[in-house]
Length: 78
Image (cartoon, rainbow, N blue to C red):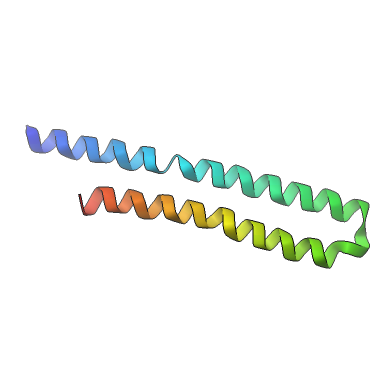
């Protein structure tokens, strides 16, 4: 009984750790939206905007990867 409770609590903890991935997904969407709006208003700056957009996406995606790593640590190590 105690083992099943521990497994259930691990699953809940891993699920809560992945909530941070929602923020990363929303952040990526907002970055792309802002970059596309800016490119529409000023097409000459598209190259610089695209570079900064990709950099912002990478940083936001890194947060989601950290969340996944924490969830896997909770499930399989603790």
